[in-house]
Image 1 (cartoon, rainbow, N blue to C red):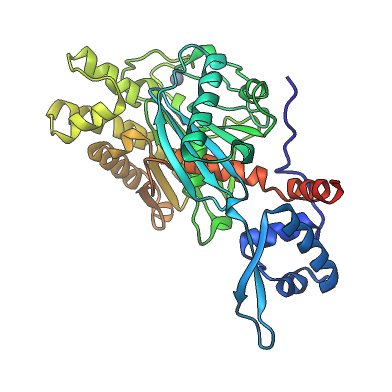
Image 2: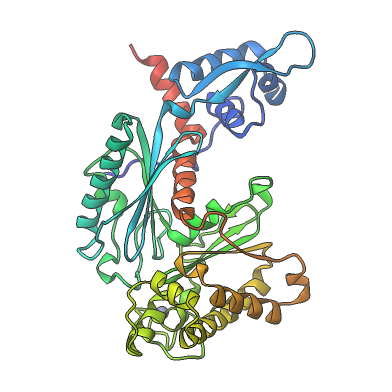
Length: 401
Ligand SMILES: [Zn+2]
C-alpha cells in the first residue's frame, strides 16, 4: 500500500508562503506590514504571497488590527472553517472519536463501540466508518476532512507508525495502520502512542517551547509521554516512556508480553487491579469500575489502590529524578482515583531530590475526559498545516486552470 507523504519535518524557505502561514498561525505576525517587518522582505513580495494564501481559502483577512499610527492594518488569520481533522483515541473498552476545526477547536467528541479484538484490519474498517458517521451527523462536508490521527495504548515505531508489541492486543503487533487506512483515503493518517497524545494536549499554552513534562496514562495499562524542551521525545524507535515493564516489588495478576517478572503493568495497572479484584470475588470489568469501588470507600479496594499507587510512584520517582520535569500530569481512567493519586504523589515527594521537587507540579490532566483526542487533533494539525504542505497547496491553487 502506498503511504501518503508527510510534510511535518520538511524544510521551508524563510519568507515563503508556508513560512508566512506559520507566522500567521502562531500569532507572531498577523498583518501584511508586521509580516514584512518580521521577515525583512519587501512589502510587495509579502503581499503577493499573502494574496496567494488567501486564494487557497486557509487564510482570511478581515477586521482592523491596532496599527502603529496612521492607516489601520487588516488582520490575517487561519480560516478555522476551511477544513477539519479527525481524531480517535483507541482504548481497551471503547474508542473516542472527535473532530476539530483548523483553529484546533473541538467541534464534536463521541464515544463509539469499535472492537479491537478482531485485529487491526477489522478495527480500521470500524474506525473509518465511525468517523464517517460522525462527520455526517455533524453536518460537515466529508471532502474537507484533511487528516486523521489515532492514539493507541502501545509503543508506536517512529516514523513508520507501526504498532510494536502491544501488551493486551498481541494480534496488533507490527500493524501498519496508515497503510490500512490508505485503502480508504489519500489524506495523511498518523498513529501515536496514547500517552504521547496526552503529553501534547497538556503542553502549556503560554510557554510551550520551554515545557518539561511527563504525562502518565493510567488506564487499563500504564503509559508515559515525554515533552522535553517543548518537543515530544519519542526516542530512536518510538519506545521512549515505556515505563510499564519495569520490574517492581509485588505480584503480577495478569500476563505480560514483556517477559519481565512482575512488571509495573502486570502488578499495578488498571487491568492488573481488575484481575486482582475479580480473583477476590468482586464484580468489576473496567478501570472505571475500580475507581467507583474505591470512591465508595471499600477498605480492601482502597488498600489495593494505595499499593498500586506506591508501585507507580516508585518507578516514577527514578524517572522524575533523572528527567527533572516541571509537570507530572496524570491522565486515563485510573487518574480519577484519589487513593491511587495520593499514593503516587506521596511516593514522588518522599523519594525525589528537593532540587527536583521544589518546582515540581503533580497534577491531573486539564481535561482528562478528552485529553487523548485533543492531543491527536494537535498532532494531525501540525501535519496538515505544516509550512511545506501549505506551500504545495499554494502552488496547486496557483497553477489550477
Ligand atoms: Zn510487562
